[in-house]
Amino acid sequence: MRIIPVNINDQKNISLNHKELYRRYLYSDVPDCFIKAPSFEANTSAGNPLKKLKGVKCPYYGTEMISGSDIVKIERRLDKCMNVKDVVKVLSKYTRFMQDTEKKIFKRFAEISKIAPEKTLPECLKFWYDEAIIKLKLEEFNVLDDVDKISLKLSPENALAVHAKTTRCRQVILENNREDTFKRKILLSSLDDIKPKNTNNEFAVFEKLKDRAVYLPTSGTSENAFIVKYAERTQQEVAKRILRPSIATIEHIQPDSLDGENTIGNFLLASAGANSMRSNMPLTKFIDMFPAVPKKCQAYIEQIIDLIHKGLLKGNETYPYKIQKKLAEESRGKIKLDLSKYKYTEEQAFAVQKKYYARKTGRN
Image 1 (tube, rainbow, N blue to C red):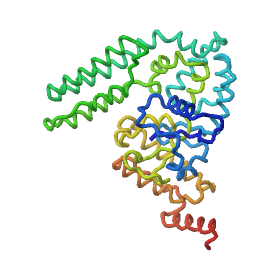
Image 2 (cartoon, helix red, strand yellow):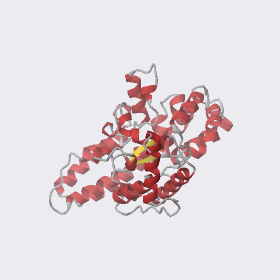
Image 3 (cartoon, rainbow, N blue to C red):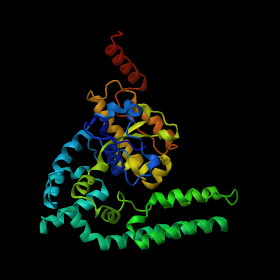
Image 4 (cartoon, helix red, strand yellow):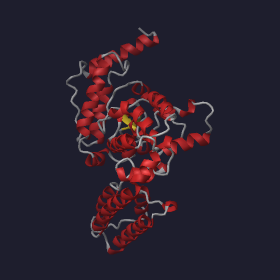
């Protein structure tokens, strides 16, 4: 479940409408049903100790994450940037935080800043737009073609229904009408309107079909989609978009929309981009999309262990064991964390944690 890492409810002089606009802008590629309302702090308060950690790498993507407090400071500097040269100068210090697509876009900006430093970011994107939109359409058609091929295993009636959906998507893509923009969520939600028959294993075919549709490009997974989407945005919007997927957020291992508990034992500190991409997708399917996730999760827990050994995350010494069990459960054994580097056994971790809270509450 997507969660914005900065508590916008604490920002004075921001109306509810502006909060909603901020929320929608940050996760504009995500269906509204996956976005929590602005008031969600109580649901993730158990994750507050994780939010205080810095320098942690995303357990899904492996990139270092940036804190909500740090992003605010950076965005204030970006607000003052007038051209691509200014933006590149500010963001060049933070390339280690950038995720793959954003890093590629930044490199483009860096190159153009050398020959046309006074251009604005939207001007740069518009310069690349014509080529990008052609390539984007081809990316989209490749996925839609695969969806059609998979649908041939359905009953003729449902196969035709799927083709009708993908045909409409192609029409929207070719028309390039900005008032009727094609988005991945449109196809995914429309496929849910088709009811699988209880024959020929249609439910399994539909799952495979939807799994392929998830690969439709978004601004977070495709340079071309990024260029097309943001070519008409403001200088500040484009500049801020480069780092926002790298913000550290609280991720439910078992989505709260699927009855996941709002406890630290169900939380990871994950980047907004990875959090948004996974949505409430089963962890097993997410691993199919990103096979390196188990390895990234191991690196994450080793960082957490190191931070605990340094005296951080006090009162949560059992966290590694809780996460080990939860990830194994949700991944159906695909993620098996090795905690051999942890100095505490599970019993010792519980005792240290119990002692901490006893001392904190004065119950010796």
